[in-house]
Amino acid sequence: GQQLNQSPQSMFIQEGEDVSMNCTSSSIFNTWLWYKQDPGEGPVLLIALYKAGELTSNGRLTAQFGITRKDSFLNISASIPSDVGIYFCAGQTPGNKLVFGAGTILRVKS
Amino acid sequence: DGGITQSPKYLFRKEGQNVTLSCEQNLNHDAMYWYRQDPGQGLRLIYYSQIVNDFQKGDIAEGYSVSREKKESFPLTVTSAQKNPTAFYLCASNPQGATGELFFGEGSRLTVL
Image (cartoon, rainbow over all chains, first blue to last red; front, top):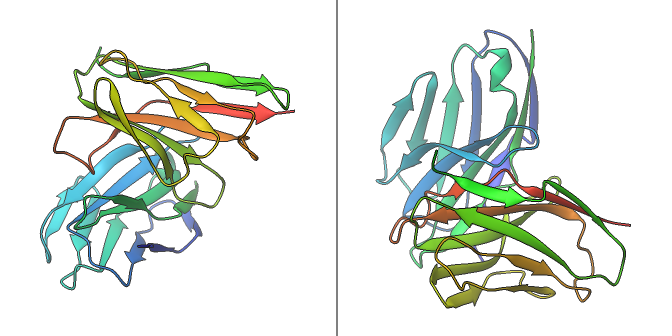
């Protein structure tokens, strides 16, 4: 079945630094989504991407739907302490199945 | 406020016991889902329901059961047949046709002693 490879697994960065994470697959996806999960909570949708090549921003977050439809990245600019959490990518297959990456754990030093 | 409510937040059970996790939503969403989350893994789909009185198995349905008697409610029963039930369980919902854009509850952490 389809799998998403999300990297890095974890990051420990200084407050104010920019962050980048990505998801890749050998399969194509029709939609890419990025979620954030705070400790002990459910994930919250950050950004949804619907077309190959699409670049979308949400405040300090920017995400892109790869032109090959097999990858996506998420950038966070000027990280702050409340950015800590787990970031998940998810891809919706042509068969309407939703597949999640394993997550990137973000820790920020203040 | 509209949202998804899961209960209990924490649950302990002995081996061999069934346990039921509650999920209620007041978003008027047609579709509801149950996911299991284990450390270092992506969310895995247990069951989903797109309409009242109908539900489908997900990728890891063995040892679980669900019902959808009301639009607002989608309880999950973790049965004694589930070999490794200790996990964080997440309920989600969305309107019909919005497969990827899920609204999640706060989760229920089940620990089997």
